[in-house]
Image 1: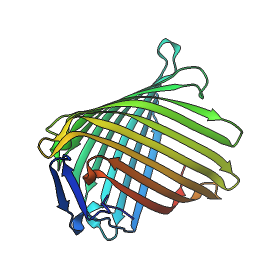
Image 2: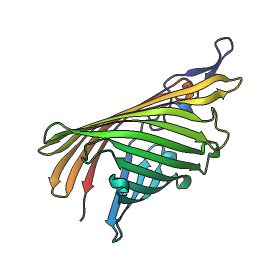
Image 3: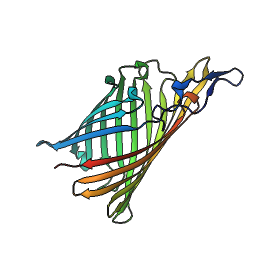
Image 4: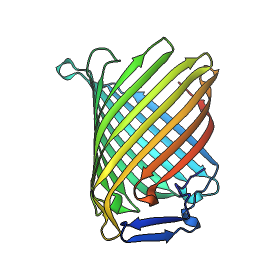
Length: 276
């Protein structure tokens, strides 16, 4: 119901309490609801020298707001190793996104994972660096460093969960408003396997603060953003390799710069087909 991350308010107020500036928003800033059709194809294979290669290609066609229709390509290569007898993995990644048939961004990444124990349910350490390269808005170019820990839990044969927390540093590469960003992440996933297929609840939150005032003489304070997302999904098994998929997702972004505050809800029904 908010495909463009629009605002419900008719006006926003910027500036300080002593010098407030009120802006009237036109229809371009209002939420737009739309149906969309999305399709994704994924292929993976193991090489003889131990690499796991994976490629995903997806397209999302938005009905009444086609300028946000997008195509995404993600490639990754993962290699498992055991330095000092610690189960670990190195993963290289490359993502590209096309917005309305034009290249919008590239995102190369490098990630290291280590299992802090011999049981897969023990704590895991993830260290990642990403380089965001915008083609249409270079002021948003940034390099992100992230460090997080996760742990899996299994309470019964059919019920499991995952919890995680992390730190992130987002370093601006151009003159981005507010400069660098520092923050943290939280996540929680609960899954219960029903006779017809898995039911999953997922919650995540990203909170960060900019290193500088957002816009001197207009917004004389540091930007603070908290984006929370939760989803509830169900897979229903139709045949050994076919599933009906249903998901509800809600996203809420709280921001002290009103222009970036929004909420959205989406409902998706789809089909998953596997070939082996």
